[in-house]
Image (cartoon, rainbow over all chains, first blue to last red):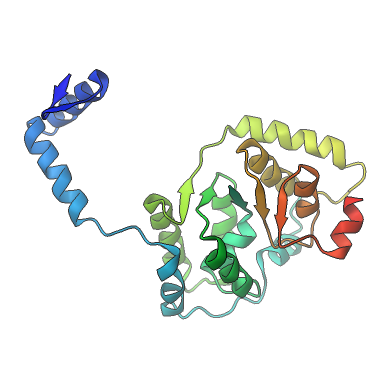
Length: 76
Length: 152
């Protein structure tokens, strides 16, 4: 099946058509909406920015590690 | 492929005695770590016990990172299969290691079920890391002398 001039699996195209219909959209307007949303979405975070974000939280050092918490609670 | 015990993920998001080592490992390996059903309750416990004032923020942060998929990703494992494998490990090792915990066996079973090669954990106070080594998983940090004694 051809969806938006792109050859896609029939099942995928039918699902997309159905999803668009449910939202009161045409397949063209629905795709346009998805593209706009995806472009506006922030980039997922990577480990590079992780430590700065962690510093920004100003966490107090934990008294105990998870291993110690496990032991303390006597988890079996 | 790296499986991290909750102790590692808790140290990456929280701040504890293992955070510096965690950072070193992450910077050298840039791992993409799976989050399985076992991690969630333990992370909740860790955040709300160790960082109650920031627990909510840490929780949301982890959820966003799982959805983002670059640092963490959700891994759906068959819970029954993991549990049965964990039971097998306990049957094999519990007579020798009386204090082997079910949770430790479950984490190791999850790593084996997911076909992971490396098992990262800071829980040197249990049999978890030694159990992982018996399953041919490469353990990081390397086993301590005490753990090596148990391994023999």
